[in-house]
Amino acid sequence: MKGNEAIAHAVIRYGADGYFGYPITPQSEVLETLEELMPWETTGMVVLQAESEVAAINMVYGGAASGKAVMTSSSSPGISLKQEGISYIAASELPALILNVSRGGPGLGTIQPSQADYFQATKGGGHGDYHLIVLAPSTVQEMVDFVGLGFDLAFKHRTPAMILADGVVGQMMEKVVLPEQKPRRTDEEVRKQCPWACNGRIGGRKRNIISSLELESSRMEVINERLQARYAEIERTETRWEEIGTKDADYLIVAFGSIARIATKAKELAAEKGIKVGIVRPITLWPFPTEAVAKAAEGKKGILVVELNAGQMIQDVRLAVHDKMPVEHFGRLGGIIPSPEEVLNALENKIVNPKSEA
Image (cartoon, rainbow, N blue to C red; front, side, top):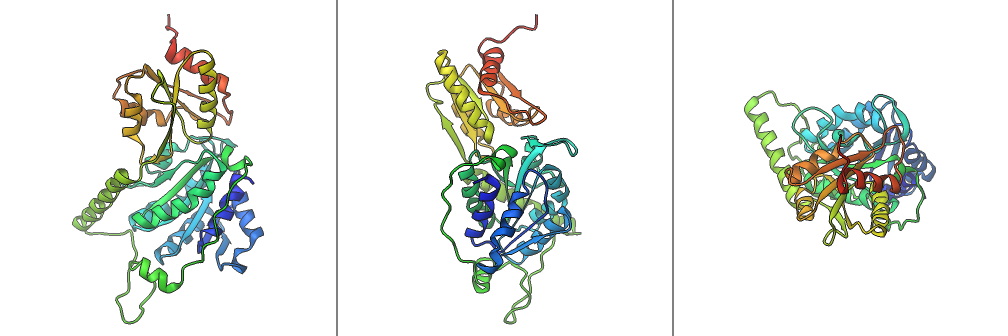
């Protein structure tokens, strides 16, 4: 099935409580598939097409505040409209899952795939000092797997998680193994798991208030310090990546999402020419696998960062290696997918045998 369709099946099988979305290419199949599957009749899951992206993210805010497992999905300009709500959810220390099937920009751009939302996702596209846990799938199976992982991490750390997929992974079809159906949590299970949730006054206990507003500066500083401590813990415990043939390589390619698959084929083509290349694929874009990239880069002659954008992740790669070796970028724009041959050509011209400007 398509990556977008697989997401819909996975969120139902996770036992999620609600999905609130709005159609936009290239992720519209998520909502369409949920409507076809009608989970409100089988699991009781709410599926609602909101009147706008802004309405959808605020419905997620409300559902998350009550301790429910809720998610939304959109594509690049739609995610931009959700940024204020995402910042509110992060400040309120609430779990939620957000899917961005990225398209080209800026502006309305193109409906073709892109990875140009890296900055928006990893640097906090909204206002204030906050982070999202960002998972970057490269297969349709990972689209499925990252639904459960994203929800679990969001609840574990009480922070929003994002699946940052590009339009290639959202639209391509592959075989997948779907997880077993999990039951939705009962209200009593929600109260036990989420004692902080705003579920009204129950049994005489104090009612919880959920808000991102704090007018007292000293208390706002305490809130921010608590968030930063949480982010530091996430960086220590939740960083994920994949390495392919890095130990014996002379050069590295760093790529994520669908482009990592193209880079892997370029590695095979390089081997035929006697060029030893290793691949590092960040799975969490935030937290970025800084130490893993630095370790894999030890003893290497250079790094090519391949992205479907003008160069965004390359900044994190350069910070990881501290200018100890050449780090160059190759990317295509406007929704054009590079071929493995183009990636190999860029590696040869930029890193292996760099052409002088003269």
